[in-house]
Length: 271
Image (cartoon, rainbow, N blue to C red; front, side, top):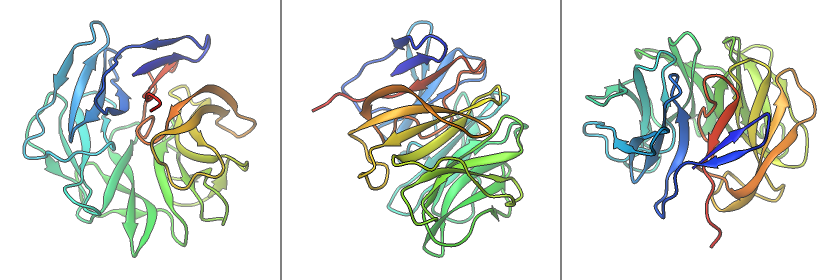
């Protein structure tokens, strides 16, 4: 588990384990991370490295699609008890009884709107993965994208006006795209050889972090030589911040520190 300082490039390893852990969320208060492992989620306190498992009630098959509300009070998780069954739930950040959010499965959480009222997620509908939103309290979902291709990893811009995601619907390897929250003004933001996934806009509204695989990789597997890249939010050349062994589970969900100076990611040992 690594913290990366964007300005200096200095990295700090805050947790090492032989067990599989994934997908760090940085708490809005800045004092802890939420990660998943073994079908559960836990808090990693940054001051002392202590681990506190979060009570998620009957949910015991949590995947790496989870997040924290902007006010820091609520945790959102996705549970997959079987293939194609992922469902989104909310619960208190301290643990407790989960509340079901998405009426249709599979649905995989990825982003929380800045004002805290709406979730965005990727969902397989009619055999295709699309980008959707839904009120955090549940109700009817809104499908923002349509047509062929695999669309994944949606996350909100800091101003709440855009949802960023990755897609291969244009017939090429996955690139980074963004769309207005009402589904209009679809824009392609990268057009290069790497296989690009999981964009995360920074809290200051200036930059977007994403994961880049080699161009011959299909999907978003674990155990690949990957890079973390940073691009201007309005488009332009990206710079490489880190190269490491990782992939699935490294930055699947929002991972910026609240002040936007650092981000968290998971890297894996080469075997």
